[in-house]
Image (cartoon, rainbow, N blue to C red):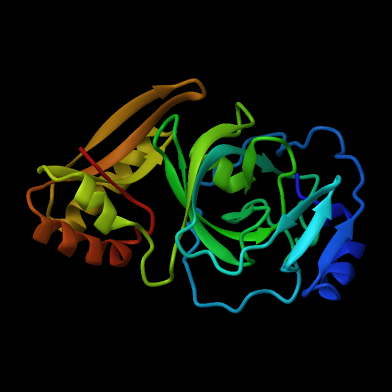
Length: 267
């Protein structure tokens, strides 16, 4: 889990050590974190939107030390891409201060990372089910071996991570003017027709509501693509088919107007 949530004195230490390493003594992690007694539907929570924002005055020392290991904060996030395990944190830290100084909101699309500058916006893709979300990195953690990102409850729920606790993911840093690496995807996916995955839901009814709205707004047909996974069946909303790169470019430009900030190109 995160470390600033239960080590508030660290904020002062790191604030005084922006140019030098900050050695931090942490408490052991508390008992297992937990979510609400009744699962909360977060399907309506929008993805985070990349912004041109200054780095936080807190949580961005040049380096810091946790449990004897020193971490060096990156000067920028350009080109960052990494694969590893994602975990999540919930009610034990809800409302407490994050490394950036913001209160932790488990129902917002945020995350914790050990070395990315705060804030950074990243796309996280669950490699088990191809679900993807955009989150704002505003906290530090996780400090467990092999884990590269700690997701909020909402982000973990959307990615299907809650049940298992962890999942293999790919994390890609985004720029405010480029929320998805679409040019790279088009180079990889040379053949048409293609489809755009505009959402994934545990509820088939919610998936069909989005499909009907997008069909009306775009004039394109769509379909529901079920996917069975360990945590249950999900219903993916696919829009298309898209026949060429020009049509794909036009649809991409319209998706934010239709309320879709997170999407995939699929075949």
